Image (cartoon, rainbow, N blue to C red; front, side, top):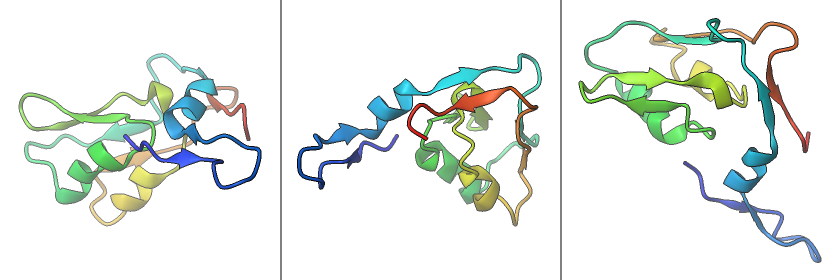
Length: 107
């Protein structure tokens, strides 16, 4: 997960870690209807593996069989996974249904 601090370059604004800002967001989970699905695979591609490091919300992880899994309850809907796997088609990405998903506190 990214540990970059933001806001520290502005006078009078103390630096804040990205994790602390993400913690301020709220989510309305659409139980049983994830907006991101990973296609079945035995060996993940490099793009799919990269998501375990690049997803800012840390939604992707590798299980003990080496496959990539996603828990999208804390997804910030940035679309990184959608862009990264556009050529491989390994991730099916849709916006959450109306009223569900992330509620940004800081816009």
